Image (cartoon, rainbow, N blue to C red):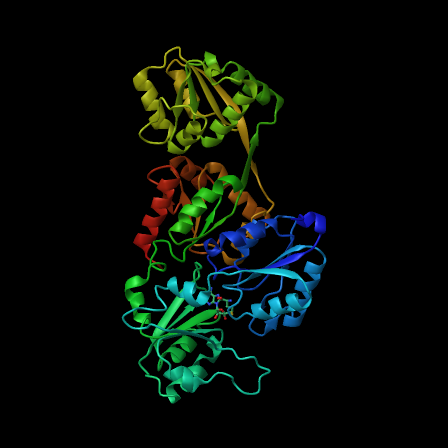
Length: 518
Ligand code: SAH
């Protein structure tokens, strides 16, 4: 088979992006996005999916939200054809499934007519998957064994409706309507006039499968009025039928502990994802707002002291790690210099907490000591129990203020080399888009996992003249971070009892459980 690069022929993939939850993109879709040279995407595609495409890929928004057409459909078709003709690997990313409404069929026809290569990658449709996120199965053996999907938005250029509401109203089973929530009143009237039971349960689900999901339930007689009163707007799926009340038992998504909570995570870009994922899995609308970047120490004297400590590593009785960053920087340097792990000699290894311990284990070293509480005081207590007189200790740490731990260990008679191995730099660029989001939408809560994240968060907001939203809760991982926050004049809304990521997540959940959903 000829390789694409040799033939230079373009190809266009019509890819279903799913209803919103980025996890609902298919593996095939993700694979193609990673190779895309051009991505042409819609209003209903979750923009975070674009991060999967190469940074060099051209990303073109052709979205339309009701009445506000960025490009005409003919222009979109034309764009697909010309991009493919130019020899590109084009991903046409479409909300839900590409062949259920949204004119995917027409786009494929245009490509076929122009003789372009194309493939279809089906997706999870909002009509089925979106409703599943509201706890509504579209069929159920006991009640509805048939499904009809129709559009509530007729092509305005059509003179007469092609939808036969009389036939629709009398057909058995579940009915799902996409588009046209704004015409819901009219549509319900048509159904009622056609003799459909006015007590038919109806649900509207908007922004299904996203943290903004909202569900409104009623009956054929009441739903339109309710939707109007509550300004329940597009995009929404409407479902009519006996399956709707199953939601009372099956509403799994909106009942997750952090559902709908907007949480900004201020760690470094690399570190944020673990916390973001944990919060998202509990239903939060969590996003990265990186305030710091970690890099190796730059100053000559620091670099020399670090190199010396790595060379002499086997001379220490203890190497004490107080952060995963310290571990990573130390062992990266260690293995650059030494071929043999045994160069560490008999040095014992202490970790301040499980996150740090985990990082040490990644380098295949066991932990000789971890304190019961994951703070310096607790570690010190443990060392006092062991006795440290005349023991040589290495403390690879962040540059900046000298650690109290080193001072206290020295007071107990230890010989301590307190060596900065990495430094924390405040970032101002908004690579993740989190800062823009924070400025535009704010957050319910912001997490801080170190004093430096708090310090640089404050600097960043001041520099960009962004003020803190009212009612914003500031969450701290532990007492050290909290004291820095207090010094900065930031009110600590909650502090984790266990000073690591799982502990912080638990504290956030507890906080919202107590304060409720308001
Ligand atoms: N191809 C898409 C549908 C495109 S038509 C699919 O398979 O889902 C656009 C309509 O889809 C919207 O007006 C709305 O009715 C529905 N829709 C798409 N995504 C949605 C979502 N996340 N929540 C609610 N409705 C959605």
